[in-house]
Length: 453
Image (tube, rainbow, N blue to C red; front, side, top):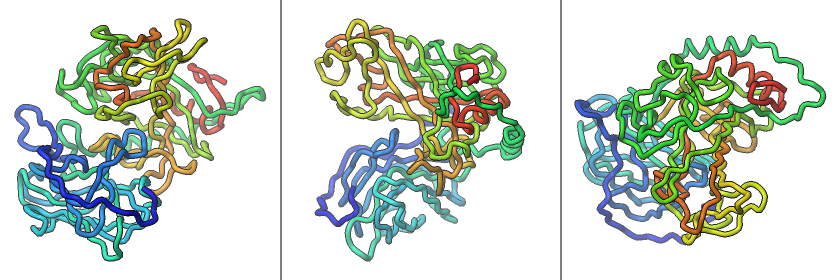
């Protein structure tokens, strides 16, 4: 959305959809944090839905001006007491507010979030407010837009409502253990980097080379403790990853399909199908790099860190030339497209590939967040700053499939090609990870799987 004023399409739409809420396991009385995607309104006036520019951002509501509103039904505000409210917003002009009200657009105010310029219509910032009291249980929540200068002034990606406790199952903030992080940082800072040989390629990079391990309809980040709650995933790395996986279980199990052995992390992606036949990855190189102007500020991932890239809910066409699409690698490359245009057909000498890039800036406070992305962000202008000041390794999956494809195309367990996504749950030996970050990323030197120059 450009910053100059534009002609707005004003309309009111009433949809049958209700707000996204947390799915609770049996016996759970309430969720600590509920995340509501902004586009999941039950009714609205004056907004449009658009794609969010950052990878994995999904959709956002845009063109919001004074007097516009969004209605969300059945939002579980939990028990009476203090309520923490957050919103992910972007604005090129600022000067306004989002009023969150219960019952109606003129009902009692839960909280007011002040909107200031964030640097652009797709430059996102997470705002936080606290409601000292609120009605308990499922409520209708209105987001009402206020602005005195006229014109569009904000985009909204999502809201979250909670009491500050981690949600069950896994939908809330998971604060870092500060003492453990301080100890990990102290060990990292004390490491003396090895001298870089003169002939070393000066690219900040090391990797873990991983093979396919197993498949399960589990997701220990999105649906912890709920086996079978997810679509099918292909797991790499730690060979006992399932719905009940925790940092402790990862570190306790030495079995991994990744090299080097000190990487006991779990990585996973949606399973790829050709018809009803699963096509498992031939191999996946998990790169740890840096896109920063100054990679020397990079810190290792804290133990137990979790992150997701991509959007499992995205179901849009991916014709030739699409960003973040499957492609062909090898002699002959792409020789055609599937009948629906969404998948490449590779030459017999080439293979199907996907390159998935994760976020590289961290808030420095949380191992996970309500959306599993709100604690991280992509670097901007080669730096990590603002709400995400800590530089972490720029993780990416380079996925190779042992197939050339046909005009019949493929499907992912999550749907169309656009729904490709990946998860990472880190469980490295702290020293082994620290040495690689210090030697390879901080010194801007290309290292191999074993962490050597």
